[in-house]
Amino acid sequence: MMVSLSAENKNEGVFCESNRSNQDNDGNVLQFLFECIQDGAVVADREGKILYSHEALQTLALAWKQTEQKQKHILKDQLAFAQALNRLAELIISTADTEIILNTVTNIIGQTMDLYHCMIYDVDYGKNELKMECQYSKNGIPEILIPDRHKVETAKRHDFFHENRKEIIVSHWDEMNPILVSNGMAEIIHNHFQVQSFFWYPFSLSQKGYYCLAFDQIDRKRILGENEMEFLNSALKLVEIAIQKIHYLTESRQIEETFKKSEKEKELILSSISELVVYYDQNMLIKWANSAATESTGKPVEQLIGRHCYEVWYDKPGPCQGCPVVDTLATGEKHKNEIYLPNGEFWSIKAFPVLDQDGTLLGAVQVAKNKTDSDKIEKEMARLERLNLVGEMAASFGHEIRNPMATVRGFLQILYGKDECASYRDYFDVMIEEIDRANSIISEFLAMAKHKAVDLQEQNLINIIESLFPLILADAIHTDKSIELDLKEVPNVLVDKKETHQLILNLVRNGLEAMAPGGCLTIKTYAEEEEVILAIQDQGKGIEPEVMNRLGIPFFTTKENGTGLGLAICYSIVQRHNAKLDVSSGAAGTTFFIRYKKVV
Image (cartoon, helix red, strand yellow):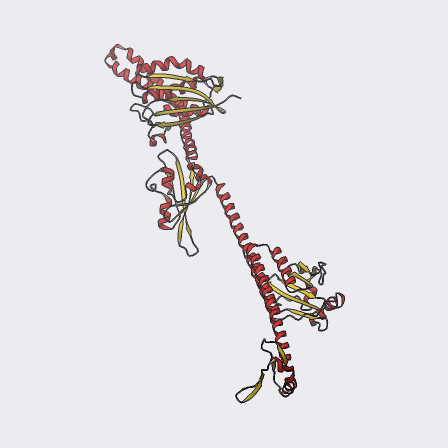
């Protein structure tokens, strides 16, 4: 059976069906029909086996087969490209090493595209040279088409290493690139190395230069297809992003390291300052403190951050009165003040505003200096100057006063013995007593003279104290008080024995007067490093802070009948012995420390 195949009144072909037994008989008929039909036709038996086919259909089938093979090849290449890009992406994610990335991408591109050589160069305008960073070779034998170190300056004249070059340069043995011809590289690449096709692909451009992918094909002329160019673009774009990321991370690390170094240097500088430096925010909370501040609290800086200074240093619920930091945070201006603390310390405190670039107040920096020692020294020097002045005045006019007083006292004694003046003898007693008292005061004045001669000899304080002990004990018993000796062995010191007697007696009597009946006064001696200490400790009520600051000033006294010269004389004696007198006082009593230097 033969059926005509038509569509829209157009003959498209003939479909024939016949029994296998009649196949040979119909052969001539089918051959005739195939010759008459110009379009494709095919004859098959019932099992689908092709018996006859038209030549046009055979040509079409061959074309279909070739198209299918080409499509499979394209899909295979696309799969290989995708897998290569995936491997490259995984590597970029896992490493921040430029050398590893460049080596890997060179191998991936070379293997995936079946290249003969594949290289990456670093074109550096700063060093005026290019350097081959890595190379892939198909046969394992590296070849150098361009020297691994090549001066850019010469080649730049031929527009090969132009700074802004982004497009790919392609050169074939039968179609050499004019740029390569002009600089002589075409002769080397194509004629000397027998390279069929050469490619120069700049990527990752920067102000300092760029990286470039160079590859070649020796066995055949290579024309890059669209898929290959897309693969190259994608691979190099990944590398470019990775390099930018690495540069960014490197710069960020460098900036961070520079910042850390700067912060460390700032911390070292501020920590080398003996003053307390503290930074507060607007709420007066500590944000930063130097080592001097942390050492003063005995706490690490972590335990200071976020706390108020008055809590940390003084365990108070609010700021100290007159605190400059409070004033600076309120006004945004610099303030300073000098404060005496309850523990007797004297501090100079300055506060400076911290402003941002817009002038907004961010906080305040406090610089505090403990001037207790320097304040003591200044006061001591002022006190000694006053003592010296009084002593020098007494030395200058003491004799001029004593001589008339001696004359008056002599005549009073003469009148005292006359019978006609007997009724005035009580008055004479008072007058003579007052003259003697005035003479005693003049003697005390003279004792404060700075340049008074002293006879310094090597003595042991224990021997001096024991020789005075009976007199001291008698004074204590007379006032219903006691004396305790705590005398540890000490080295000898240079002292004037007579003046040391007066020093000890003055301090002991002051201590006895400061105590209520039943109190005990302790006299101690001990050695401390290069010093020998004499300590006299009472159990009185202590000395008020305002009185403490005026100790030793001539004529200052808290006693009803005192002259205010006793302690002044003690300070003068200590000064002449090149020693030091310190005072410690509290509610449990007062201790005077006289610090002598050991005899070398």
